Image (cartoon, rainbow, N blue to C red):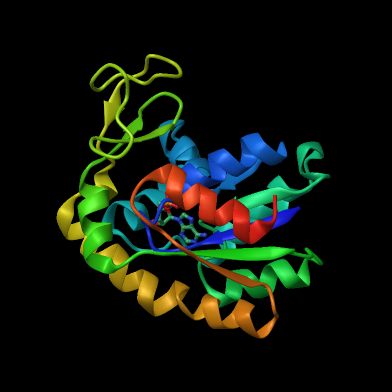
Length: 210
Ligand code: AMP
């Protein structure tokens, strides 16, 4: 199955992508994670992306499109994949179509803006493996330590309050038009991002019929 997860930053795309990945045994591809890895490794792409990410802006389409082109031809994508956080602009969605990628479903996880702000401010990520946690909704077993790899849990720079507001503005302006884009193509599935990760997962699986 080839899936896209749409939704505002903090709607829970990353967490749900991991759950679907485990259930359907297809890779979850997050351009955010790929970019953060590039920044950590100090690659040319990472250096180029850093100022955009830190300020809450989107990384230019050409950078994202080349990441996706490179990633989707890898072997593990043969039986499908979940795109988490990409496409984020109409130009990126059009590029996917031009690449001949046939998406089965686009899942829009809907969460109100004030809930997003509350959620993002409690978010923690592992500095080593990138796993996602939340101080209230998905705490790690030991405070500030990753359950998977024992890495240190940190607050992402772009989860700081002023940046969250900017990211939401960018989402409404540039990414939300994709809801209409995929509705017109008959691909859209709307899932309410309710409280409790498992409850959203349950709604999502029902809608996907898996
Ligand atoms: P995420 O972890 O998906 O929230 O991504 C973190 C940041 O990476 C975003 O705020 C953007 O600056 C950048 N980014 C990730 N994916 C994309 C994309 N598809 N298009 C543009 N920028 C992106």
